[in-house]
Image (tube, rainbow, N blue to C red; front, side, top):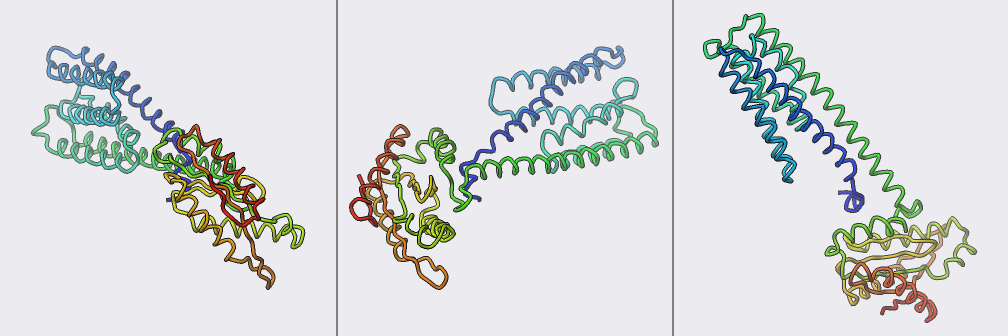
Length: 351
């Protein structure tokens, strides 16, 4: 899994998709129920079984939709609705509906399974219903309605075409949804990434990380907050040029990122300064990790035009026990980092 997927929420696109399903579900449940109930009560006395069955199904769809407003299991309501639709479809084929027109009313329903369950599961649901219809229609002895062979063959052909067209439409709609989701994800990732080091930037810390810590504080606290700064970085730029300075930043960024844990956050918050966050980590372990990183930076020289450039960094280490402590801990880590600079650089200061 991409590291960024732990932080960048795709909830907005998922919520749009869920809203679409809910709109279809409620429109289908309420509008179609009214249509079913209307035609049910237009039946003559000879069709009392059809009248009762359609009324029961119409009322069932309405009750199922109303109850869905009062519980969180929307998927259950969708499944019950799809089962009701399957029963309705098979009953219309079996009974013929009003004046043997039941088959015509079945044709619009394939789209519903695709909207509710997606292109793959929707296709499976439609195929099952299709074979059930074939089993009914090719056994006229068990049918209440009477159909001509030409009606059955044309209906099955039309129903199959409807399934295929709905599958194509839903498949490419889903592909567009995936592409739009990835565009949204990549835009958020780009906005929250430092272009040079490819580390999270200050925007990521201020927006995404703090939002995540607000929602799930147990995943982050207690937290060790570390600020580290490359020593004599201006001298590196002045002596070797800004291109070498950029290489030095990338070199240090990679060392930090590659030697931290998967749950840790390594970000560049400006210039030669990096912010490290160690979730669910006490100050003593945070100091130990920071010392290890300090040694790695010192020991791993930067190769530049057949030369080896030794870099060092100063670390300030603090701790946040709750979200409300975070800003104070960050300021404290910054002060401690400058204390490390004043004390001779290339060392870790904690407090």
